Length: 104
Image 1 (cartoon, one colour):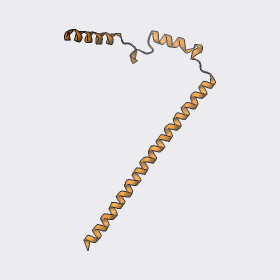
Image 2: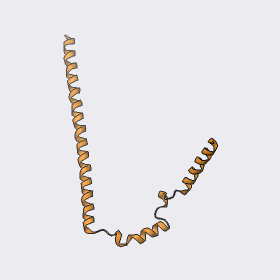
Image 3: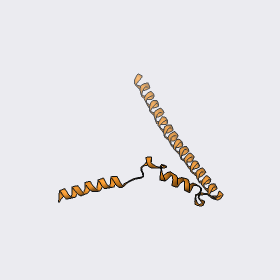
Image 4: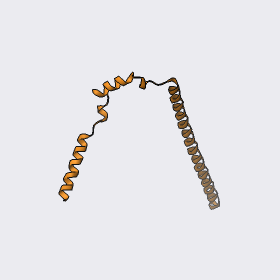
């Protein structure tokens, strides 16, 4: 029974590997490129001005969101860096005070 299950799994794996197509390297060659070229000028492939403007607005919104997230990230890093610098300066001051009293 175990040998049968193992043979079945191996056969399914091999058949699946042979049956799958559409690798990235196969795109736009042969039949695929002819179907792309045929569909390129079809009425369904054309976009209206409103659709183009909507896509442009969406791209602008995405750019603005990315810029905003970058600004927030930089502000958070700066805030963290400033806090670390303040702690470092406080520790330096404590060391200076300690060395002042030890030196006496």
